[in-house]
Length: 403
Image 1 (cartoon, rainbow, N blue to C red):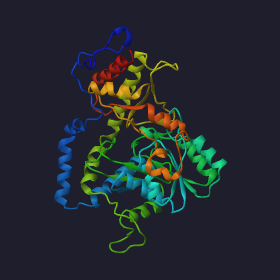
Image 2 (image 1 turned 60 degrees about the vertical axis):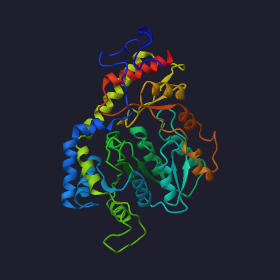
Image 3 (image 1 turned 30 degrees about the horizontal axis):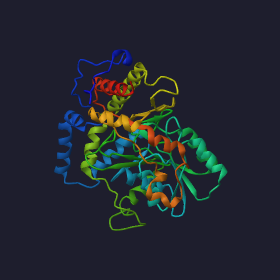
Image 4 (image 1 turned 90 degrees about the vertical axis):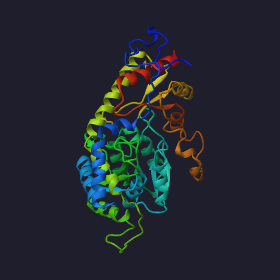
């Protein structure tokens, strides 16, 4: 095994060369939360102490304050809950999804995007992705609705994959044409925008995740759901608390989906830094783009071994992940792992091929773009505190693999 960040030859790599800061023993993690914690440690501990002193641990003032702050960010009412998965369920049920109905969504996402549909009693209908962005393809959704009119379909659930918003202008037009609603799965997209509109404000409701790996992350599990409809927000507040508008009185069957105050306090600390952290991610993505181009790995030809995902001109992504499509992806991943460079595959098996969804009767070949993406995508190190030297190390190593 060759040493990490040691290029095979400057002629092959071009402008991508070892930096004086990069050593042969450099390890580059996919994500390093400790660096973030070191920068905000005192603020976080003070916030946690504030909750402990108050003895208000579930919902309460901290959650209410976080809801107001997220509302200011998104321009939509916010309802804190226990997880991103809970947020998806709340959004779907509050949007009126009922047992026996159906929801269109993407097969190329985390399991919760579709399992939440099932939890609401509905059937997921998978439609293939745009081959360039890997977001749900609005053209294919419209075609599905025109060719096979299905009165069960009540909602379209696009996912803002990897932190880039789906084409919400086209989904809005489709929703109007076919009299359905749009719910955003914005789990990976806090702070992202589409045509200047914040993620979380473009559908009847939207779900965010604050899982520890997200751009805005809790120290445990937490989520939030947003809506531009005040009556929907009140409905979700009841649903997250066993369907109860006031203590011990229950108007419907909800669930225990309440957010705890410690998570809200931590999130409030981090929210103050989110804009800068997201901007740092954008700068890192630009650095990756530049170094890949300089290396020749992403040359505009069919033989280029690396293809970054396309970015829509209307989108302002937040780069929850920096994802490439790579030839010989699994071999490349093993090579990078041997050099102590962290990577991940989001996602190795599309949802329509997951055993849990076998009852839908879909098979290999039914959604070929998602299936091809599952064999090619690779997430590279991406977090605000990543250094340019580390990014160079990653690109140099990929250039080594393909040289």
